[in-house]
Length: 136
Image 1 (cartoon, rainbow, N blue to C red):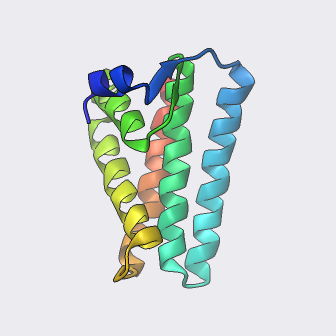
Image 2 (cartoon, rainbow, N blue to C red):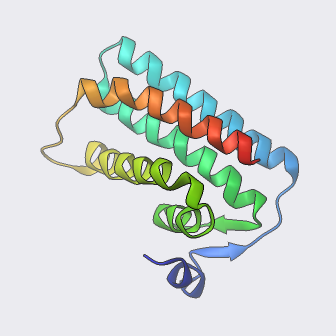
């Protein structure tokens, strides 16, 4: 979905957030990343993938909130980052990839857990969250 479609459909709306809400989003990102580590330690790789994506998503929302928008669709957060943050291009590609993996883990009938994807995802999410913090 294109950013323009997100705005037109109301999936992204202008909204003012206080700085503490933005900080809470970053805290949520770190919390979900910690949860992902616990899941990996317990060999719950599907749940780890969900937590990895959720951590990255909360970091992405911190940018969205700072930019004065609230979202009603995960794809529109990604569209906002793609359009407005070209330096995050590779991180956004990873975020979108884990969005699809999360969807499969939660809703797929034949979803397969991938231990390597989960373990590698921790490193990718850490890098994404670090870049978001630099932007903010």
